[in-house]
Image 1 (cartoon, helix red, strand yellow):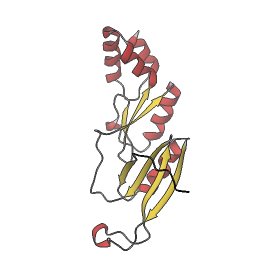
Image 2: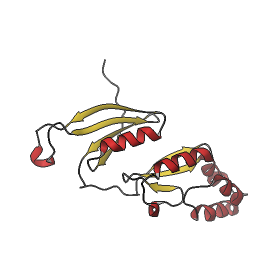
Image 3: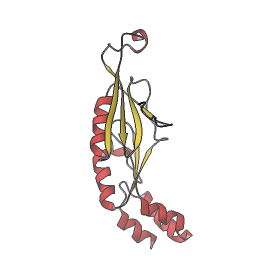
Image 4: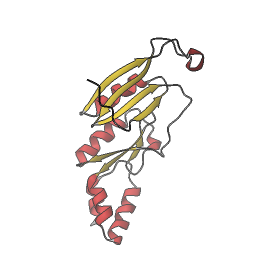
Length: 165
């Protein structure tokens, strides 16, 4: 039977550390798994300059979302213009993901619930309740909320609630 392939899959280009990145992400997210692995052959060596047998791609899944990790080169870098949002149900969940994903990351990249992990991927660790407050709130409440939010690195849901009320 053929494997069903997700219509759109995120391809993540790594600087020859795809294996470490996949191991890290699948350890952070409980609902995760590693899939198929492909390897470089001698074909195209003049372009990619990688030895046959080196891991080329690793399929993996976190929280039902399919990803492909590619061992590339330092030729391409990530930007904060694209990020992954983790919608959290509680402060404990915010704390868990923030603490895990900031391990080995640059503290200068942390602001307003955003962080860039040690592999260069940008994440937003956001309590779902924040989105509800922003959408449903009166203008003055949203203004106070936004002012509090802009002063935070990791989001503090209790502090956001106080500012909102």
